[in-house]
Image (cartoon, rainbow, N blue to C red; front, side, top):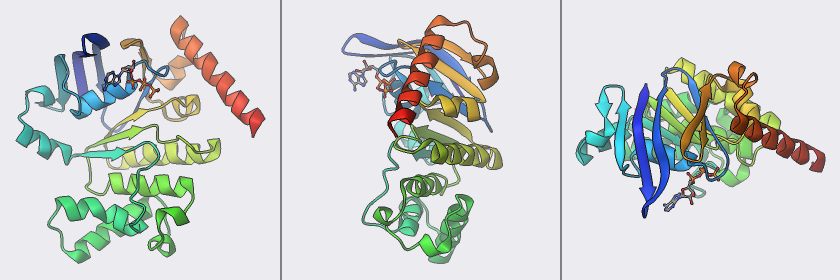
Length: 252
Ligand SMILES: Nc1ncnc2c1ncn2[C@@H]1O[C@H](COP(=O)(O)OP(=O)(O)OP(=O)(O)O)[C@@H](O)[C@H]1O
């Protein structure tokens, strides 16, 4: 579980996050949604400790990141898996070398143990062994995302952060990626936080949805509750999203 309590973050005196409190539960896909510029990325980076917040607390289970010295923070970071926007795979490394990379960097596992772990992770994202030797440029966008997820879970993280995991994917592949993240979250009982623009993701896997509006908690609830909401800002966001999805469908 990750809990944030009354966090504030500003840049050069301009407030971006204003008094955000929420809980991201273990074993659930916790989504953060909101308009472009609302503060989702700043929130995600603050929770990760990439930005120092002005005020507030960030609890990773029983540890408050804000009060944790840098050396301890490094240890905490090992418990975090990240799926970056676009996948961010290393082009020059094969699929399996990409997944092995964190193991080389952060563990003292033997070559055999690493290979077993790489195979385990790639199997869990449904990548066949015939693809292990390929390079990112030789596989589809959806498969690249799956490799990025395999790499993110390679160190067996307790916490998984995904920043727009569906960017650049068609709706069908997006659903596959969403379901995959959700099933891994359940299987490994991770606390998963996903930044997304995608209303389909909200409906499919939004077990807990946090709507950020102008740096504040605008609404929080489940994918079932969101369909009944009377919250005006949230409804505007949903409507704009539907229009966007429709325009994209008509264009393709
Ligand atoms: N490093 C920074 N320095 C100054 N201002 C920043 C910085 N990072 C973000 N901001 C500002 O914070 C606000 C929120 O940005 P943020 O990137 O969190 O939005 P977002 O909701 O993630 O948007 P998007 O969906 O487009 O990624 C914006 O006004 C942005 O300009």
